[in-house]
Length: 348
Image (cartoon, rainbow, N blue to C red; front, side):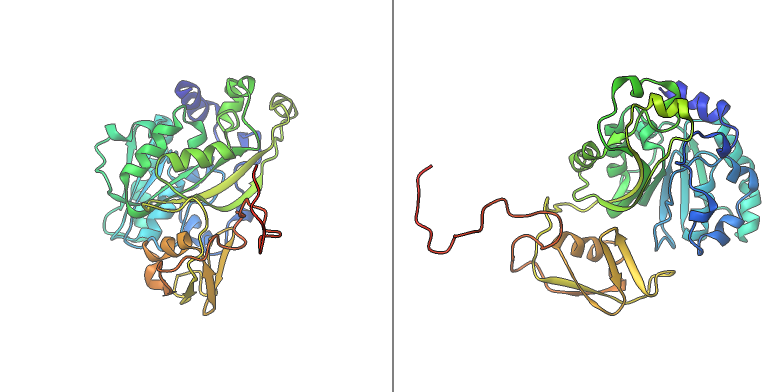
């Protein structure tokens, strides 16, 4: 599979126009604040972009960021503007042709950004074997990836290494392709479908289990959209499976609970995160308006309190008193609540 992917992205694809699905984001989907940053990226780097989402979380100034499957370097050069000269972005990719494009334009971007020295690095390697690249444990604030994890034949190793490299309170913020069911062998083993990020797509339920298995409790879905297969022959070979591009954020926080538990807590957003003066969007279900008391479950409270977001919120409450499951978070008590008052005991 590594050889198939390297050949597809190094030789078969010359620009994003060669893709046969709508996975790759177009300019109309880019938020306004990001467009000036993209405008400074070299045209050749942009033309070799094959991502499926936006992997620029907020508050990256001064952070160390790792980009898995960095390709031609588009996201690395965008992120390098967000981390600033005090930060650093490292891109890892296994495709030499793509890395050549990224490396060729390092000086161009340093001059375009006005930096005395560049704040990026690129490494040739496999995202399943990050331990072989000499990257120190717990050395990154944020790890990102854009439509690459699905291409890995060993996703367990990827998640394990990401967890190892993240600092406590850090996050894995990434976009990828997911399926609405488990992908059958004939789709999984089709070289073209695999190269188009469909054959290696995880069933979303299996991804949630995988993330939790490697220490990322309570994965949060940020956004998602359906993927259309624009090639009729390819669509027929995909066996009617529904594919979606989705962005998740996984926090490295020990002891997150498996359910959304209510401790009577709330947060108040100060409106101080750049580009988010009016609202802070943690994920698809937590769009927090500035200045308003916003009730949260214990996990959400910790995601904001024990990470780089802390100074931008006021925190109400503690973990001293528990009120059961947090209402409206998708989990319900499994027991029948009717006729519980005064009910007589009965044998089964």
